[in-house]
Length: 617
Image (tube, rainbow, N blue to C red; front, top):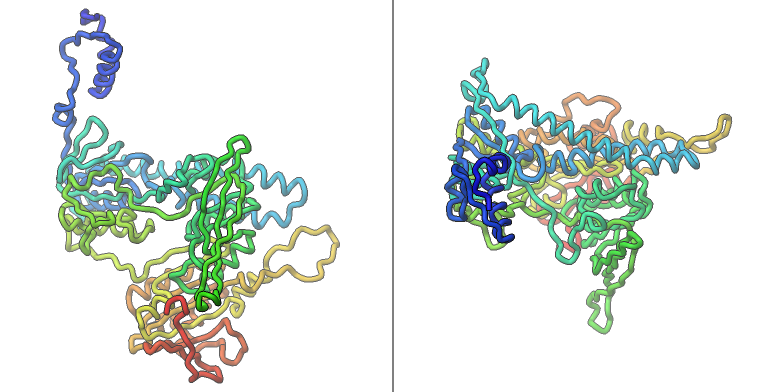
């Protein structure tokens, strides 16, 4: 027993937080020790906890510090609002900083450098390059993430103070607001109250929830961070470059991960794809290009397959996986109907990487206590402004909506949500018609707007123009400028090393076939594809006539000339006359709502061809 107040004072100094006192009380009771509390110190009972917490009030409370949350918080600062940001697990920036958006792209760029250097290295030099590169990759990746997080932290310090603006014409208040950061798990206590950790309750007039998404959990194959990993865990778990992996999921992330590991030197890569082809919702030529790219990198893609079981062998540091392939054949006895045949095969690899998709991160938020309603599948019910239908003071942005998992989309939605809350005259509703995305394979693939298959499914009259980069100057330069493998001085090289024509890529545009002739979408594959889609996105958003691209000046030589030539093909003013050259890869064709496609310039121009694939009929 301790009854002397002087003796207990040092202990009280170290246990200033109520949570620490509560834990100590519980431990002493379990040990049957009686502590006579000195005056001024008291334990919190479960019924007194919420009332005794520190309480703060804000105009805007942002839950989640990723791209959507951060953009919304800064916009609140612009509009002069007292704002707080609550971050839980990671630092500022969310998965965009601490996940794959920055770290993965650093690894990919390093892999590109290794890919270019390997033909010049021989023997021991090549082995040293592959063996010692992983530690440098990990170091550079961490440095990139830490530097970006530091930049955001420095901005947060400056945004914590109120400042007056010298340019009142801008879309903001006369003076700024403030932003304060709190760390901890947030959960709603009531429509206007959020608990942060154990000691803080935040009251706010408006809430922006942007907690992002998490990988889809697989009860049969739970991630352990060592043998079964997510892409985010791969960097932490692997001490060396994995020599063999199985990637579960033929998604964009799965293809990018396979390309990244292949560029870093992983020799055995398997991708499990449940569909009959990659990206079944997009155009077939995009899927074929991505498939060719993966095959050139030595990646084995298992279509129409699934993972049956996985068993870890810790003594061998391997995981055993059984992949089941489904093959279809016609059974005469069954009336000619297709019958599935399943063939299984077992592989032993170092890592099983989960790329099977993501789900909204609503865990522990207790949205029901805020009055937010969800449908039977758990999707949050929102209106056209991404505002909760049942709790109009709660807005959502980013991956938590479960629709478009892109950082740029989350940022647009976060900015718009705050503008709609406090200053609707500044609010411009986001448009997703010109949404851009890039798939980082070798070489890259860029998407913007509607694909050809989507235009057919909507039964829109449209014109499609496609040109392969081999018919453009930039493609020829790429074809013949790839470095030769290292040769001894004076050694003769019989034939130049050429890039395969299938890897050069193409540009394809979809134009609405009416008086407006506005651009619906672009698909571009090849080196520098990302530089094409932004110009196309602006044209799609503004709904201009495609002649605006035909009249503009593009740098030469570049992949942009292919985009301009496609537009000229639609207008009938192209330099490349595709119908005079026997080439099936460069064409222009017209689709009419009757479900027929007409190829221009060919002898059978007026002979209709089926346009809808058999699997869509």
